[in-house]
Amino acid sequence: RTLAAKDSVTDAEKLAAYDSFIANAGTYEVADSTLTIHPVVARSPNFMSGGSDKYHFRVSGDTLWLSNTGAGFRTMIGGQLVTPPGAQNATMLVLVRQK
Figure (cartoon, rainbow, N blue to C red):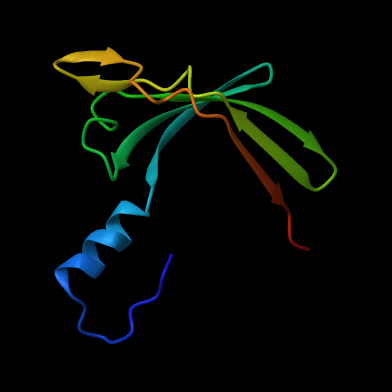
């Protein structure tokens, strides 16, 4: 994300910062090698209204791999939980435990 040049930012800078940000917090379930998250708080109100996302995970030593094809992403649209158009993008996240 681009840092603001000054403490006082323009509306365009605020929008650019918001559009580049994704966050959520909530509960999760683990079954075999699948992690399913259920947001309670999220940037997108539709995602925290019963939405969920699924990740395949693998742990080796101090490294955690999370992968997602987007097919397990569910969000509330028009009063129904659906996989939104464009949610088929693949994501890979690699986290390493700090000692």
